[in-house]
Length: 353
Image 1 (tube, rainbow, N blue to C red):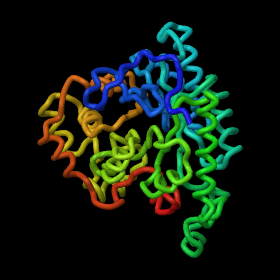
Image 2: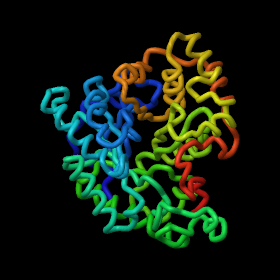
Image 3: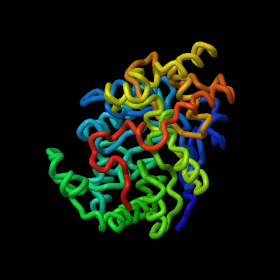
């Protein structure tokens, strides 16, 4: 299994640590030799038919890594990301396709060997690309037979009640998904493969059957309230790049959840973050994104505002002191209480093989 592949080298510079990045083109060298920018642009929940303009704007602001997924906006976002890349080339915002690092994600409805290859082909078609730079398994669990899931049924039969596969078959099926991704890598349809939302337990299970190890990236929820330190340490030990989503606190937290965690304040407006921002004259968002970089996490913040795009990318000129880092580390809520994402999924705690 060839780890290094002969792809055209990109206009990116490899730097070992995220905190050493000096601009949006500085990245980390992945296991297969391509370079992924440490800071990218996310497209989650931009809304139906609303991803084109922000993605084009991000490219014109200098972002060179775009993170999307098969399922975003009811399967609408990939097509708009593809259109934005095409338009950026036409308008000479970028010279060529090679100047953008594209991440997309396989959807759980397509777990299995042939299903995964089908899902990938659909993504390539929608993105209008010949290859994807980084292809991730979006979710380690099953799809569901219905979205109208009754609480009483799940209380009686457990969280797998509506799953389209039995719990005991999940590990094998997931290994087939990975095998398809390994084959897609060898055929040049993808340049690197990785996972998202995987726990240590799920990674260890995958390791038993994987021909290609480690996965290039594990993209997971991580922010000061829920830093996911044990998983981050495991990924560092295995050589997996830890990519943090919801680094600003995400969009899935409810009013009730914020009341429970921070007396009703969101992460961006909590005193610990605001105090640091005032002290060093940057925005709260810049504090949280810099915090992620100094923990060696890749990030893909999302916004529709051109002003915030600029702000989110302007995080290379300052450093948080040990005192600042400790004060943000102190926000950690033990256990799983501060997990904010995937809140309606019966298996959101990921406590399965």
